[in-house]
Image (cartoon, rainbow, N blue to C red):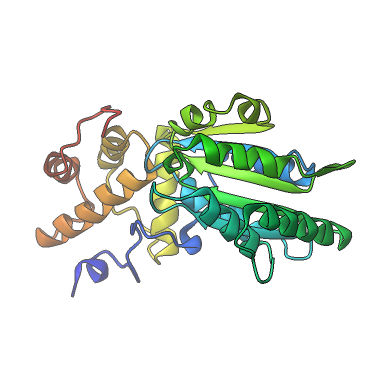
Length: 276
């Protein structure tokens, strides 16, 4: 018997790998999606979602992509992996993601190809949206200017392309390097950590998806999971995953607060420490 069997779990409920099966439709996730989709549907051009590390930005970006019906949208998701992205690379990537074939090497030609493709998509009755995650890494005024150039591609009904940018709070500083671009933000939303009741619901939800319908944490243990994590989903997952293994080692069911304290100590977490 392993730790999952001991707690009647069919799989690990608290992995930090993004898995849409475990998606938790919290109030703020729902609110964020409503607002971001509004920006897309009304062809506003630019929407921004920011949040601290671990609050669920990537999860939300992937969920939004999944919910954009292919019959209504031409949608793509790009994840920025490093800070050395160039304007040329980004423009080529956006062009290819929205369906431009044989993308040119010259930036002006690429812009012409993108414009033609956007018009073609629009004639098909579709809206084009590009989601970009980890945009705070693009610390380049030139790239911000390129975004503004893309947003200048308009028709009477609105923008031919909507950009939805996801990133850490410092993304706002990056956007500030191009004041005209920042002024074009039509919708902005900030993700925060869950409150205590939402943390409880989140834990129960993930346990249920993993096949367990019993409470494997005491109420006191769950309360301290919230306090140590500040309701940040990634930290909740890490605490719970470690606690389940530690609880199994001493055959404790349900898991008490003492185990949460021990795990938090090993992870250098303190109750209410927003820097955790």
